[in-house]
Length: 187
Image (cartoon, rainbow, N blue to C red):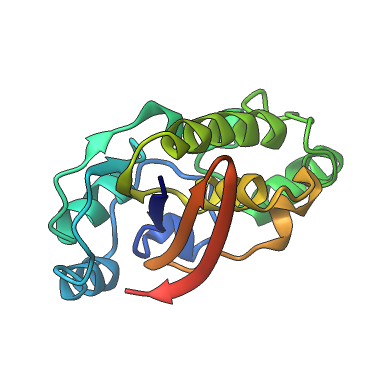
C-alpha cells in the first residue's frame, strides 16, 4: 500500500516577507491573490490537514480546501522570539541565535527545539505511512523541512539547509517506512 503526502507551504505574509517569527499575521494581498489563483490545481485527497496558524488556514481556504486543524503540524514554537525578526533577535541575543541555528537540541528562546519539532513531524508522517491514499497538508515551512529531514533519513543538522518557497508543494510517496521525495512544484 502506498501513501502519498503533498505538503504545501503557505502563501506569502508580512511575517514571511520580513523573516519574522510568526506572530499570527494574515496573508498579504499578493499571497491571497496567488493562493486563490492556484485553487483547483490540486488532486483530490482522502485527508486534508492544516497547520493551526492564520497564514496556513487562510492559504487552505484560498485554495478551496476544507482542511482539519492538525496539532502535530503546529509551527515551531519560538518562545519569546515570537513576532521578532531574525535581525532583531541577532542584535539582542547573538549567542542564543547562533546556538539555536547550530544545535538542533537548543531552545534558548524558551520554546521548542528543532529536534523536538522533527520528532513530532516524523511521528505524524509515520502515522500516515499506514494510511492508504493521499493526504494534502498546508503547513509552515519548518514543518515541510522537518518532514523532508525525516523522509530522507537526513541528519537533523540539515534542517536549516533546505529552503521552502511560499506556495509550493513537496510530494512524498512511501510504503513500509520508506519515502520518496518530489520537491518544490509551484502551485
